[in-house]
Every structure is written in structure tokens, then in C-alpha cells.
Length: 239
Image (tube, rainbow, N blue to C red; front, side, top):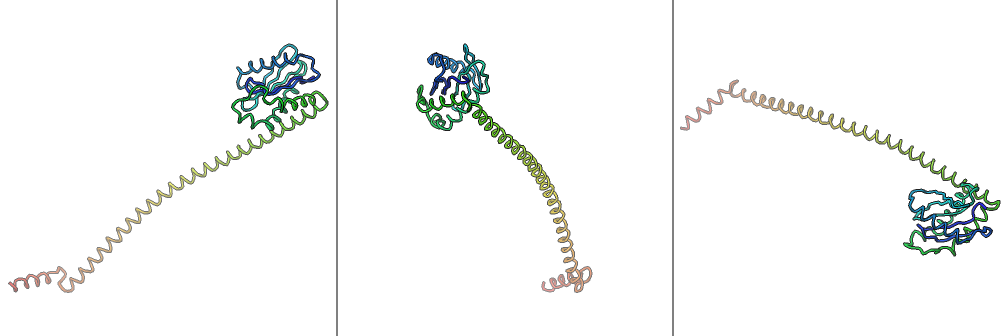
């Protein structure tokens, strides 16, 4: 039998477990070994998948979110592909049905979900031990391939977005450089216009002074002597 025992645990607390009906080994013995496996794995954080041999059985363990673990036991000659496909299927069902409940609960007592989930694990063990195992495995593999495809598409989008961001950065740098050049040119033009205005003002002032001089020269002479002499003479006469 490919899978003869399965369990769901949070940390080292078993929340639900199921034994294969046709499995002749003592159920309490298998449950005890499963708990020892959970305790042993607790010292190896970050190992998402692990397998532990115990006598003629191999216990396969798959980590989930929120400190959950999915465990199953199979024969030594059954390999790892089918047991881990079984665990992937169990994990998906568990997250859909009880993921929110586990996440929101600070503490769950032992076997808290046994009545709700053990029968589902037992049925899945039967499916994976019968002709349905190939269909279930193909289904899981297809879902994994679909997830892989989505991930690759997301990676391509991210890379494409990264290229666009690089182009945007280059365009921004180019605009900043153009803006700096424009400000420099504007300052030069403003200075040039100021000097031109100053020159025009000075020239206009000179013209006005010259025009006034010409007007005065018509009445007072070129050196304005007559006007100044009359002014002095008038001053003496009044004295």
C-alpha cells in the first residue's frame, strides 16, 4: 500500500490523523512514530520536504503555512513521488477547508480537527492506493505545471517591467539633463538681454542729454555762455 497513514499537525501537535483500514501494523505504534518524526523535524526549520526511515516504513513530511505540517507513511519501496503528491493534495484540501480556522486560532488542542478531516485523508489514501492514484497524481502534476507556467509568466512580466523602468529612468535622466541645459541657456539669454537693455537705456539717456543741449545751445550759444552771463547780470542788477 503506497500510503498507510496520514496526519496533519501544527508544530508538534497532531490535529487529525487517519490509518489505512487494510494496514496490519499497530495504529498506536505508527502514531507514536509520527509524533517522534514531528519532534525531530522541529529542529530542522526551513526544510520544506523531508523523509525519515523507521523500520519498514518511510515517513514523508511536507511543511505548510502557519506552522502546519502534513505527514504520511508509506513502504520503503514506494518511493517519494506518490507520497508527496498525496501530501500536496491533502495540503490543498486542508488549506481550503481549515486554513482560516488554523490561522486565526492561537492554540489548537490535540486532535482538534480529527472529526472534520480524518475521513477525507482516509478517502484520499484509498484513492492513491487504487487505480485513482494515477489520475490524482496527474491532476496534482497538472496543477503544479499550471502554477509553474503562471510563475514564469509573472517573471517575464517583472523582467519586462524592469526593462520599462530602465527606459523610464534613462528618459528621466535625459529630461533632467535637458532641463539643466535649458536653465543655463535661459540664464545666459537673460543676462544678454539685461546688458542690451542697459545699453539701450544708456544710449537713450545720452540722446536725451544731447537733445537738451542742442535746445539750450540755440538760445545760449554752443557753450551756454549767454544764458549764464544773463543770469549773472540779472543778479548784479537786482543788487
